[in-house]
Each structure stands twice: as C-alpha cells, then as structure tokens.
Image (cartoon, rainbow, N blue to C red; front, top):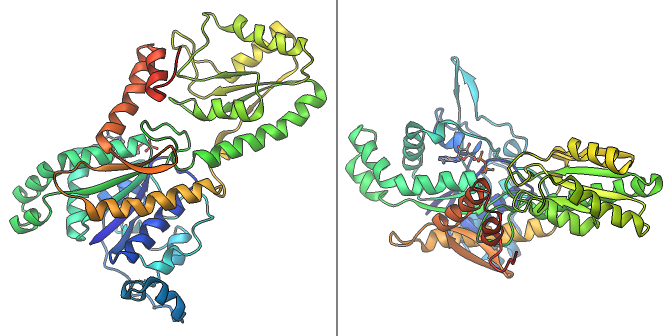
Length: 422
Ligand code: ADP
C-alpha cells in the first residue's frame, strides 16, 4: 500500500511526531510512505516537476536494528535523501518557474527522513490554509494527484476544519472519480482501482476542540506553555498585589482557558461555552474577585479565552475586563496576551506519546479499511486509543459551535461533556 500524510490548518506541537509515527509505522508494515507538503494546498498543486536526482546517503545499518524489525521494508525504505530538506522547510516545493508556482509537494520519504522529529515543535512538512481545496475544482485536482501518484491511503492531521475537508473529500470521492473519467484525466480502469478513498484523521489542534475525543494533539503542550507563562506572571502579581488579565487561545472552545484556570489557581475564567450567568456580567466577576481579596489574596488572575462572549454573544475582551477591574475594584491591572507563544515549542511528553500511538493506529486503520466501513478519526477516550467515524466527530464538533451561536449554552456544555450538569 502507498500511504501519504499531510498536516493542515493551524500548526500544533505533536504534528512532527505524528508524521514520524505514520511514516515509521507505514514502513514497518510494508507500505511505501509519502508526505504531502503544505497541507491541502500541496495536494491540490501536486507534483509539476520531475524528482531531482539526490545522492543516496551512505550508511551503515546495525544488524540488530534490522533484526528487531525482521523486515526488508526497513532496508528498502531507509533513506530517500530528502530528510534535511524537509526539516529545513526547503527542498524543491513551490519553486518559482516561468511565473507559476511549480514544484514537488508529494514526496516519497524513508525511515531516516523523519529521524529526530519527535522532540521538534510545529510541522516540518508545512501546514497551510488552502482556499482552493474548498472549491470543487481544487478537490478534483487533489483527487487527480492522489490517483496519479498511486496513493491508496491518506492520513490528515489537522483541526476540525481540516477534518471537515477530509470528510468532504471522502463523501465526494465517487463523484470526483467519475468527473475525472468524464474529463479524460483518468481511465475507467484507474477509476475502478480507485473507487474508494481510504482516509484517516488525526486531530492536531491546540484548542482541544474536537468532539468525541478526550484530547487533541498539541493541546497538552499549549496548556503547559500557558501554565509556565502564568507562573511567571504570578510572582509579579503577588509581589505588587496586581491583577493580570491573560488572554489565551480558543475561539469556540474554552478548554485551554478552563484548564489553565485550574492549573494556575485563577480567580475567574471566561469561556465561550459558558458565559457568566448574569447580564451584564461585570458585577458577577467583581463580586468573586472582591471576595478573594477580602480573604487575603494578594494577586488576581483572570483568564479570557479569545472567543469569550456574554450571553448575548457580545465579545468579552481582555482590555474590557482590565477596565472593569481598574475602575470598579481599583486594582492595578495589566493585560497579557500570550498569542503564538502558547502554540509552539517542543512537544511535551503527552504530545509525543499521543501522536505516536495514534499515528500507528492510523496506519492500521488504513490497512484494515474496507469500502463498507466509514472513514475514521483516531481519538482517545479514558486512556484508550480508539476509532470514531469521522463524520460523527465532525458533526458533533459543528453542533457545539451551532449551540453557542443559538445561545443554547447548556447544550454546548453537554455536547462537550455528556455528564455536565447545569
Ligand atoms: P483547522 O484544521 O486548524 O481547523 P481551518 O479551519 O483553517 O483549520 O481548515 C484548514 C483547511 O481545511 C482549510 O484551509 C481548507 O483547505 C480545509 N477545509 C476546512 N473546511 C473545509 C470545508 N468545509 N470543505 C473543504 N475544505 C475545508
């Protein structure tokens, strides 16, 4: 089987370990492994130039390593010489040629190409937001490129948007193949050989915003970065008896804000799913903070998710919270927006373990896929790696956003956590 992996949407720590796991598990199971650079954009553009001849690295393969895997696949797939180029984000993708972007986005990789990727943040194969993949024309080009390169199975690592795109490609696949035949791009035989797209999703998202899985790849690292930042702020806050309003990421999902609040002992947290009960909300927050100050607390930490709002969906921004704390409670208040510092950096242990276990299962799911089965997203629930129909996960995630939009906050919370009680 020929399998490819791409990373898409916002980058997250753990994407490199995910790619590494898919490549190494694929090779171990006897597959040919590919990476697709620049997410769906690379899939749409495909390969428009021939592969560059690359010098093969001379290497000594320790016998015990080969014995450990007991397979010829490892020897055959040791190196294709593109590793350093991938790692540096260079190589020959997106070369400017005769005024058009051309190059190679679908690249064969071997075992050595992903060596040392476990502890590295972001994604070496690049991620992108692709407007063209949202169009039928773009998805036709993507399907054509997959068929042209002989790729039988695709692993997409990205957030809810990327997995929505994956689910759309799966749902439309039969139609796309028929259109490619009608347009003379592929033959009837190629169409028959590619009648079913094997696609698996891995959730790479710092927000932990995907339904039906307990944890997404990148969320533990982002949370750790937020905690470290708040720990640093805490010492200043306590020394000067100040208040800090910390804005963290999370447009539709308050997991980072809520967990950071628990980890840092925050006084008040604003999350999209559960706005303050009172409208206007200012006095409710001030009452809580006043109480904490009265029992001797010298510092005040308020965490605001970037997508926080009141019960009428008016945004609650960190600057506004600061003004309230300053004017009503007369606190010396500062705002800290953590921004991209919380996104990246070296993956914490959980963001190595989770993508490794899930990447291996993604390969197994591709190898075991049959046309009558749904495409899966690989999740984790109560510490067990499990497969969830991609369509269910995408629909339930969209249902949370819809419930917030409809101001049905109780439903938003119970969709996030079925055991939640108002
Ligand atoms: P994330 O995956 O981090 O949520 P986005 O929402 O930006 O990030 O999605 C990443 C990419 O996935 C988009 O740029 C687009 O190419 C693709 N995508 C998202 N939603 C759809 C959709 N409904 N149909 C087709 N492609 C989509």
